[in-house]
Length: 397
Image 1 (cartoon, rainbow, N blue to C red):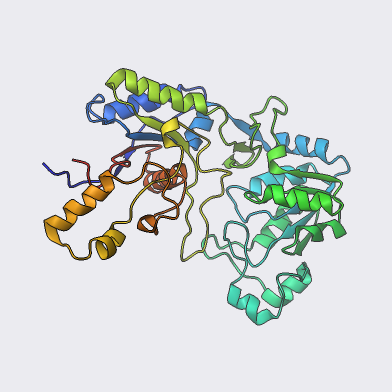
Image 2: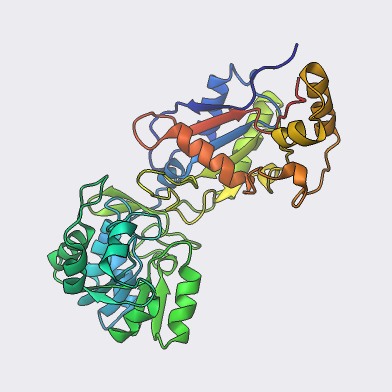
């Protein structure tokens, strides 16, 4: 019988995960329970678990004071600049408290009109009307207010300029805010800089060092090792962290490869099925209304099994229907397309016209986005995602 269902993504409910829990066992047991003891699992199914609960099970936490101590060690003068922070109550504001507690004075350089992940201070239309040149103009706070006033974020209702200013001063440090899209502008105020952009951080550091920056770090350098016995992440430091309490953060998980390998092994031993596994964080997609890119984690997936390496290698059905087989229809058309799929090249089809329009993204980024959308970030209670049929195509029966 012809199969009429393709990819299916299911959120799997799990116990509330606490520090020290066996995350591999919890994920495997939860999927087995949801899949009729493994009977409904198929080879090449994918089981993914959100980075948040992996980090929680690892007890990968740190406090604001831990951050402050690391900042004092890195910037002993207590005076430094913060370049290109994102606008966030959940991700960045608690980090900023730690930075400020370890500082005497902080200069913040904001990009404008938006941060790296798409949070806007003001609209592009406002920028066009202002006469300000975003490629070269450096604005102090007074000039910024003159042009753009006090605008609130459409989703959070926050004025992040005021919020970050008051947050720094609230822990006893001085604050001065400037706006520029060239990181080198910060060097007119201080030669000591903490780059806080996520996906462009290596370029930012390189530019700053070449232009005369003396002490230059990014957030991957902060809590890249334990401080006062804290959690840490040797690869990403503070990147990917989230607020846990008012004084504590949960860091991005570390040592995730044994987790995904362990999940795949446990499910194979229980079901006999070769299942792929991954840890996922933020998806990589853009909200068309709020203009916010979801990807505030350093990567979509910090670890995955070998079968998730690479990109899709697919044919575009509408291209085949409209070009190669435009003279066919009905069952004859479907049969011709299925035959093309069966004999498609096994190597990459980049540049092949029959594959144009297929999504040229890594499998882990695509699957991670699917997982993030399925699990959500609120109270669904499904930190585990079970995906079937992802690697199927029209020929699958």
